[in-house]
Every structure is written in structure tokens, then in C-alpha cells.
Image (tube, rainbow, N blue to C red; front, side, top):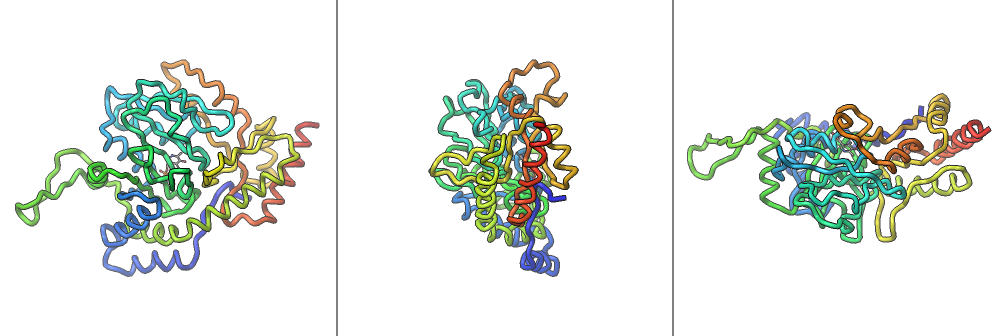
Length: 362
Ligand SMILES: *Cc1c(COP(=O)(O)O)cnc(C)c1O
């Protein structure tokens, strides 16, 4: 089965991890902060704080922003559950926003004016244009789990040009991996401090006092990234540009190879934007049959995502009207896309898709 996504790990990644395993520090050593420094530099942000997962990083961002009971966070209806769960963890309510049909990002003109927080997802790796918000909520958190390596006219995603914090994931299917891991970048020293405390049990080091002293004012978690994971992340970060380059090459190749087929290819974004191409989601007729037949042909297509309002947890007690999300969901299918996908494999995917589309039309 050709998967829809998978990591690329080289011997030098393995060596970087082995070096940490042979060192004195498996966690809370020098590698975590080095990875944070490299990441911050790469995305042009003053601060990066690493976490044990993208989900933990989202949770920390919501908590650091002071979003909690009585507050509402808006996010896209077409995203992974973590984009909304992060607000629920802290006791906030969630408002779902319908998508734009061409980008499948949430429609910034539909964000309710009274929400306290926006969790802005860059769907498939295409940056959501935050300058199009009619009104900026008090807190804007970018869920850039798909978008490490993307750029806008205002610089790399992660520089927080129009947000308070930006969250990345290092899950193996994302732009680069730490096996599990995530990070928050920010321009605020105060938010960075809060994020670090939240990650480490709420522990603060008071200035002066006993040398062993530490203080806890707020409850925190152990959401740290180990040095073993950070070593992989740091080594992978050096290859990020290559990975995103190859993803873009493959996406352009799909655009050409699929041009004459009865389906809709995803938007590449406006001029001046670099897409991270985490996903290549096409829209096809008879999606269920196409999905099943491609899987039978060993093409590991996926559906991103079952919309949040289709899950009982988000549906209960509400009657959502999110027609464009529903229309998109009925047709969505993510084709295999990852740096090690060969042209030959991609040709095989397209051949299988061409045959299957003829069969379902016939
Ligand atoms: C992957 C993903 C996350 C969560 O990241 P993990 O590192 O798997 O916890 C959050 N939001 C979106 C949109 C994602 O795709």
C-alpha cells in the first residue's frame, strides 16, 4: 500500500538520536533548547517552546492566552479534533466556522465578531490569510500543524506576523518529524514563560532564596519534549526545505497529470505564498466508491477530515449550518504525498485513479 504520508529518516537522523542516547541527558539536557533555538531562527520568531506533541502545544497555547470558562474559541469545521479539543481542555466553548470552497480554509469573513480566540488552521499547508479577518479576536493562535515550511508575503509561517502564537506538530506525516512532538512560537517573552511553566508542572524558579527552591502558583503538566525526540527534530529541521520543495514538486506534477480528469485539484494559493503541501486533497464524484476501489488497488488514500460537527461531541445540543464544509466533505480524498514518493509511484496512483473514475462513471 502506498500510504498518504510518511516520514523520511536518514542515517544522520539516526546518528543524531544515538548520540543523545549515549549522552548523560535523555531529557531536559542541552538538545531541547538547541532545537528550540534552531526552530525559532528558521521561522523568524524570537521564541520557540517545544512540547511532547502538537496537541500538547495547542493546549499550552490556549492556557497561556488565558482562554477558559466563559470564553469561546472559533476554529475551522474541517480540521483534526485537536484544533477544537485544546479549547475544551481549558473549559472554553467552541464555535465552528464554515470553509471557503476554493482553499478549504475557514472563511475569515465568517468568524463571529464576539469570539475570544481564533484557532486558525492552515489546512493542507496553505496559509490562511489572517489579514482578511473583519475583526481580530483578542487571541489568535495559528494551528500550523500542516504548515511548517510555508511562507506568506509577511514571511515564514511561525513568525506570528498576525497572531499571538503559532503551533507546529512533528508527527511523522507532517513536514518533518520528531516521532512525536510539537512547538509553539511567539513574539511575546511573557507568553513564552507561561508556555514553559505549563509544560513543566507550573514550576517557577524564584530569584534569590534557597538554591533548591522552586515555586508552583498554577497547575501544569509534564508536556516536555525529550532530548531524544529533540535530536531527531533538530536533525530533520535541516532537511525541511528539501522536504517542502519535493512536496511542491509532486503537487505540481499531480496538477498536470490530473488536469484532464473529472475532479477538482486543490488550490496552490495566491502568488507570493509558499504552500507547505502537507496534503493533496482532491474532490471527486462518488467518493465512497473511489476511496474503496483505490484502497483495493493499494493506494492509501485518506479523508481529511470528518468535519467536527459530524462527531457527537460537537453535534450535541447544536444545529450547525456549515454547508460548504458538508459539500467539500462529501467529495474529499487525500492522494499520497510525501517526500519519498517517486515519480513512478505517483504515475501509478494517477493511473489507478483514472481507471477508478472511469469505472464509477460507467
Ligand atoms: C496533526 C495535527 C494536530 C496535532 O498534532 P499531534 O502532534 O499529532 O498532536 C493538530 N492540528 C492539526 C490540524 C493536525 O493535523
